[in-house]
Length: 124
Image (cartoon, rainbow, N blue to C red; front, side, top):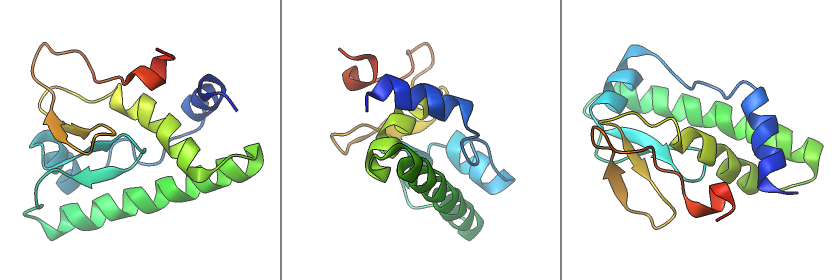
């Protein structure tokens, strides 16, 4: 199944915890927790707060369930769904937030910099 079809369906579906509780929002704003290319949140640095870790893991559990459910209905792998969701989620990274592309390196979006959108997300 093409990424564009999956992406459109995922945008229509409520992506679990796009925003979250206070500790997670603060960790994101500080660049400690960020979006990964695979549709999950990750740690760019060790979170100073156990609450941020707990909230991050809760978001990832909800996302995993959503990706698995969608994948089983569409006959694709949960990994493919996660990577497609990652395209949308990376496009929403705000200035100051961290993100990881498929090369495994953490980056932080600078003010005035465009949102990170890998070539495979646009078909390029």
